[in-house]
Image (cartoon, rainbow, N blue to C red):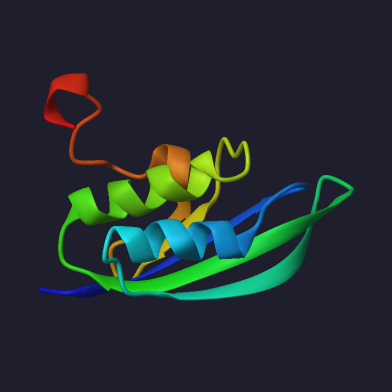
Length: 100
């Protein structure tokens, strides 16, 4: 079954085009919207990534690509009907380095 994923991230130096290029290189179809976010009194560049996913491994791949593009430690993730919250609390498939 496929689910809609919405990943929202922000950072002072975040570049949504850089994320789009990396997603494209890996063949990940998605919609990336630029926005401005205010987090703890800081105004930051934001990106909202929307796509359809069938596996947690794909979600993990999208998160790793996204966080590497802007020194990001956490973001907000919504997977319809399954999860809505911080990326650090999402029940990833495995945190074991051997399963990556």
